[in-house]
Image (cartoon, rainbow, N blue to C red; front, top):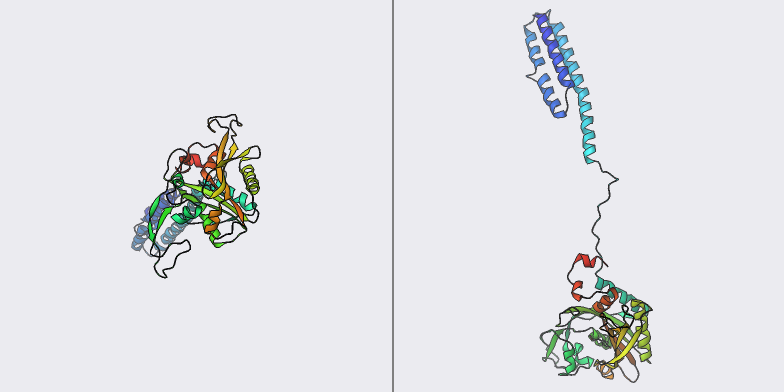
Length: 363
Ligand code: DAH
């Protein structure tokens, strides 16, 4: 009986140690431990049978079982450490960052080409001492046309295909005439401004000369083809002071053209008509592609029109109550899209508004 039990314990020990040595992971370790040492484990079962032994036999066998149990526990502990270490390494390996891998390139935003050109234009004029002003996109007929000397029903208004919005009733109250001669209760025509020139009027109403300003902004016209968009951008310029001459206008615009297009481009002034200036001119730069020999880009003329300009018309000064005998000034206005197209050799204005990254990323 005793020898039998000893042999049984030995077998249990050997088998247990083998199993423990073969353990590969903590899950199996857990199960094995429970199986060997748990309530239903083989060693526990043996311990229970010890009760049936004689008091003389019991202590020796009891010791043996306990020794075996302790050894098994020790081995379990050792292998647990090993398994935990293995697992820790494995997790580290899985989570490891390979610092030699190339980084993830984050998509980088950039300014739209129109915005860039606009800011470039602003910088040039700020550098010459001009200030920046803004006006509303929704204008009245008065600021967009009348104060700029476009008489009512005058065909010059057809130069600009206007988006009309509706009529606004002037605020009721005092019954007095407003600044520009309208009576309250009268209706005022609202429209989307067709150019940035009305900002000239708004600024001159509030501020007396000397005045050196530009007004960048969005303008709207009923127009849509490869060189025209219903919404586009302009930068208006105005310089009013005593003794401003056409020579000042030429000087400022020559400097501007050289700064935007380079000093190798020629600049020419060509007489033209705009109701709010007299004399009026259109300004051209020589075509870079054909060097004035004439090509497809410049339509064979050798020149590219870039802006309109002129000396402020006395009728405009009268609207804003600036004395035309004391002050003189010049104004100019340019299309930002047009400048950008010429600068970058773009032949379709719609490219600016399509949001195609392949186009936008080139700037
Ligand atoms: N406002 C004109 C347009 O949109 C451009 C222009 C021409 C502005 C001559 C000016 C100017 O200030 O003097 O076509």
